[in-house]
Structures are given as C-alpha cells and as structure tokens.
Amino acid sequence: MSELRPIQRRTGGRSARVRQAVLDTTLALLAEHGAEKLSIADVAARAEVHETSIYRRWKTREGLIAAAMLAHSEQALPVPDTGSLRADLTAYAVSMVQMVNSPLGARLIRAMAITDDSPDLARLRDEFWHTRLDSAGIMIDRAVARGELATAPDARLVFEVLLAPVHFQVLLTRRPVDEQYTERIVDLVLNGLVDRST
Image 1 (cartoon, helix red, strand yellow):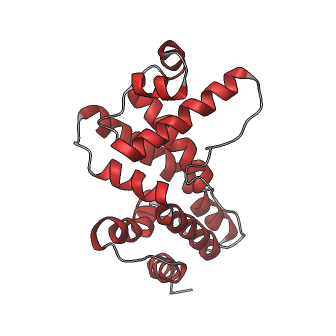
Image 2 (cartoon, one colour; image 1 turned 180 degrees about the vertical axis):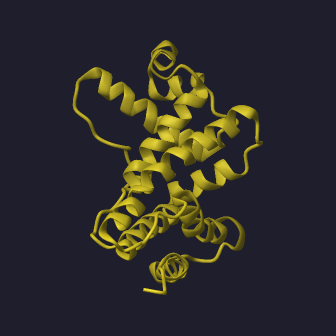
C-alpha cells in the first residue's frame, strides 16, 4: 500500500481531479525535497497539468503549499467532539501522533522544520498554524459552554503546549511517541487549566 494517500476524494469532474492530483503531488514533493526546493513547474510536470491551471487556482507557490498542508492536516487531524475536554484533547493528540508516526507525516514535519526561514515561508508557516490552531480552539469553546472550564484560556497556548512535546520527540530526541505519552501530556495540560478551587 502506498504511504502517500490522497488528501481527500472528491467528486465533481475534471476540475476536482486536477485539484486532487496537484495537492497530492505537492505533498509528495514537499516530503521528498522540502518547501524551499518545491516549484510549481515541478508540481505541474509530475501531476501532468498545465502550470497556468495551478497559478489560476492558487496564485503563488506559497499558496499552493499552504493549501496542500492544510488539506492534509484537516484529514489527518480532525477536530473531535466527544463531549469531554479530556477526551477531545487526547483524541486530537493521538491523531497528531499517528500522523507524525506515518512515513509521510514524519517527512513533512522534518522538511518544514529544516527549511530556511525566508519571508514567504515564514508567512506560510504562520498561516498554516494560525488556521490549524484556530480550528482546534473550538474544543476549548465547547468545554467552556459545558462548564468544564470556568473561563476560556488562551486556546493557541493550550495547543502549543499540547503539541510541542510530540514535535520535540520527533525532531530532536527521535524517541518513539505513543498514545500513553499523549495521555500524560493531556493530563499535564489539564492540571493547569482546571480550576482546582471548585
């Protein structure tokens, strides 16, 4: 079985097939060469589409990379709704572990981490994480509405604290990360969020 799975299967004719081919190819090239070396010309050649088709839809190389990464992360990291903050955070962290433990996910994370921080790539990185962390913040909003949290914390900080140890292990220590590790991280995060006076 191929380790590069299509981002998302869609119906809708040739336009949808072209979009799928371009995004899948972009992910493959990101994993192989990193963001700095990716070019729209290379994507077009491998996906067997015209460069003009890519520019018409995504405008820039950075826009294409952002679209591919976001589409992949939305599939690999769905926002859970279990009815419990602890279960939501655990499920989200487990999805992250599964992604980084996959050959494609590990290569993508390393490729993005080792690229030079050009202004365009810095803007791309900020856009990617802003979008992902904003969508994950829904879990915090639901917890406040259910009364699990007395007040809404800084959702971005919560998810940075939740996900940073996973990236640390993958990128720096290269130690294996499993679901038990994520449960320990979630408990640590929740100990800092839950109002212990109640």
